[in-house]
Amino acid sequence: MASFLSPGSGSAAGGRFHLAHIRQRALATARMRLVWVVIGFVFFALTAFVRIGQLGLAAQGPDHGAAADALVPPRAEITDRNGVPLARAFPAYSLWFNPHALGATGQPLVKTPEEVAHALAQIFPGQDYDDLLRLLRAGKPTYLRRRVLPEEANKVHALGEPALEFPRETQRFYPQGSLAAHVLGYVEEDGRGKLGMEQVLDARLTDQAHRAEPVALSIDARAQGAMEDELSRGMLETHAKGAAGIILDVDTGEVIALASLPSFDPNRGDLARNALVFNRASNQVYELGSTFKPFTMASAIDAGVITDMAVRYPAKPLKIDGFTIHDSHDFGASLNVPEALIHSSNIVTAQVADKLGGQKLRETMIALGMNARPTIELPARGFPIWPKGDWPRLRTMTVSYGHGLAVTPLHLAAGYAALVNGGIWRPASLFKVDPGHAPAGHRVFQASTSARMRQLLRLIVVDGTGKKADASGFRVGGKTGSAEKAGSHGSGYRNKTAIIATFAAAFPMDRPRFVVIAMLDEPQATEQTSGQRTAAWNTAPIVGRVVSRIGPLLGVVPDGRRDVDVSDLTPLVANGDGE
Image 1 (cartoon, rainbow, N blue to C red):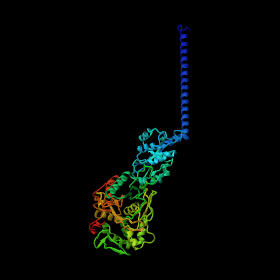
Image 2 (tube, one colour):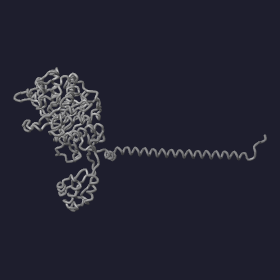
Image 3 (cartoon, rainbow, N blue to C red):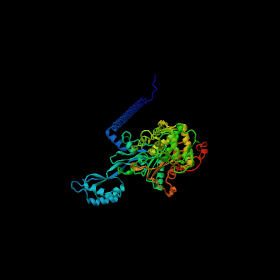
Image 4 (tube, rainbow, N blue to C red):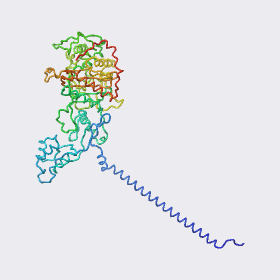
């Protein structure tokens, strides 16, 4: 058979085979390169993961722990219930005297100690020249001042003294100044908490595991500021020597504000012997006078001694065992219980207590915690002056209107909370209470008795001695108390011008939320109080102003359309002021 292949056709086929072979080799080379790229990528990725793992292990070691610890303050922050900082750590400079800064020359200072002390006293006007001179002459390493401002450090540096150094330290700072100082306390130069919650929480605040977590107190900085401001105003208006105030949640026992005036600045470091650190609200005991009368009446209602509010009692001076009980004014021949509270009658209250009996009144006071230190976390808690043994007739009568038994204002606040909240006494606390976790407390008064007392306390403000506490729309109820201060060493009540003026209140009385206590120590009769020195004229107005300021802040909206129903009592009451 003849061949049909054209000339050169065999060489063309061989060329195609050669080209295919080249393409196969190129593809193989590309695949190999891709494999090496992938291998390289995997290698570097594994290397990176290994390095990350090494760093992770190192992070658990001591070096990283020290670095992390440096970011955590040496002492945890304290805040109010809303997170407002009350105490925190901050970096600061100190002034340190290093007598060895110039070497072993024997001369620690360039200038004389007198010249340096004089210059430092000018830079720091609060520093005592003699103290500075003594420290410089001693020639020992020591702090000359803590908390030096940068501009002050620059002035000291300009003196040209190498022995004056500025170590940078972390110190305690109270950004609100003296606000709630007696609640917080302060931190001493050695770093330990002193007084207040700084002392109580010292271990917790310095615990390395919890230093990054702030501690929230029950205090509301806004309410605290309002209370301190109005107490200060009251002191100035009456020339009082001191004051105390408390705002207490009646359902939880949370202390919303606790003030003692005069106050102190916890940012200062020289407070160890400062008399202003004494806490009048929780540590000083007083005879709180007529503020005790509602306790007596409530106890008598509970015991069935008072069953009819219309029953009248003689209101003429009462002579018992050579002692005469009298009222501040002549209120007529007789008074019923509502009138006795409205006019603040010692005579009628004493007769009610006499029928009640000393044992029952004593049991009531014990149930209210009046025989023991106040229950609160503060270390400064005053022990009451408590009549020992059985209470004879005269003792029962005098205690019924607030004499012969001395307690702190904090005792009074907790007692009034039980009086208006349905009858349950709960311990006061400076820790914020989570909803639904209030302490159970214990019952002191029946719920019906508490409801009756809310009516009576409201009447006192509407028609009686508490009129000046009537904050519009807030339905305030309360009781005045003006007690002569007991003399020292058993001298009795000789100083007729030295009194403790107190107003104990709660609001709103149709559904009580808060107790408010205001107390002035030795207020004087002034033009601002119309020449009067009793609680009706000085502490009642303080409470009225405080309630108006704090009510909206604490969620109590004023409402002039609401009030306590006292329609069954008003026909029994003849208007008029007493105390």
